[in-house]
Image (cartoon, rainbow, N blue to C red; front, side):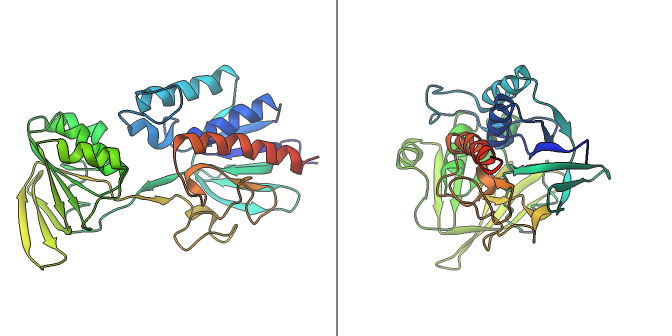
Length: 306
């Protein structure tokens, strides 16, 4: 018998992972949470304001993440810092391999690794990351006070970033490859009402340039073929996310973009492997659905072990 066998390993400690950890602790499961970053919270730590989580209107994302982690710590949830490289199915248990060579065995695994920022993959993007190219307006916006910047994207995050930066920067260009924005209607209304935001529809960024830091970007109009250059101090990229699922390729079924295919009860194609939060296929990726997934997954585990 494997004396070190855990009931549960949770990989990732964003809202979904932390919710699962809290419910697992209350269910008295022998668990461990593995997190590769220095902080828990996932993407919400980069969110300036959360207006759609019931009862916490206007909450700062970082502060909410701290509260989530404090809740888990109060229940004495055990955490380990490390990066999972692979999971091996051993039949009666799963063997989790970490980057440092360590292994952890568990009867059940919850994958809560979320998603990461999608890149533009244009010239200058990688070279100027951290020197004017950013994927987090709330993290880096203050460095560009009274400057001219661009936000690339058309979804909720891009619109929220543009509005946030409009309070700091002299001018904000909102560059989107489509004619119309995709974000929530209320955000679109605010964008068009904000005088120092200029919407650039049907444009793609073809190059980001500068010397030691960003000084501008080249745009290409997809309809006319017209090229335009903008003098900028920064480019904030918000063109969506992609799942952090590389380490489970071939283990469970995923869709064509890499999101883990999971049912509403968070079960995957492999017995005793569950997916929660932004990593799984779902119609809405928000904090509220991530937290719900964590609770649901533990209920599924309890049902599957009866």
